[in-house]
Length: 241
Image (cartoon, rainbow, N blue to C red):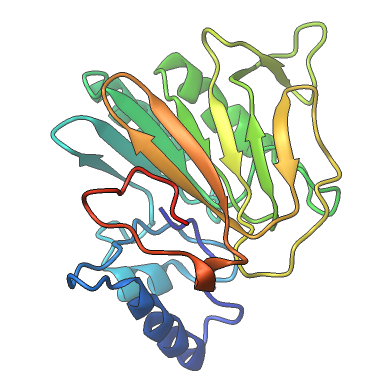
């Protein structure tokens, strides 16, 4: 799941370089790491994502179901209004897929960035967070801020004790992770909340294991990737040397 900002300037030269680099994900057995893409602010139009990744909806919001109903991933577009048609589609699709075991969302701009250099996204919080809660979405992956964060399960609320419109709720909350620190210049993680579980200014990817019983998220530092051993089908759940 790759929620935008693949390049800095959305140029032909950068895209050629990016796709050449992505070929390094091809394993010795010939399999490639597939991509579920979202649009970021460094993709200067929706057309970039439709042209490069064959996304069928020209507005770049869509749902994909994996593993015969184990997981449905909602890719949302924070570069267009979070209300209106996008919100209506999200509500309808969430309502129609309550039989799926787990529901994730990914989008570029975080509702509550964990760096002071980024503004709060109140409109996104108002439009999407209540739907995430009502229809039992479990995990939201956010980007844009160039750091790593992991929240406790939280729900949107203005009740006493809230922090920026969220309160911790281990029974009914949504876990938010991110925020897009993978190669771009890192920013300080200097805006933690009461409900932040962990944050760091590190290059990383999130490695997520899913079965019918649980979700496990591992945040993996990537600075030593050239010295990391590969995994195969026999040991793919282990942390590599």
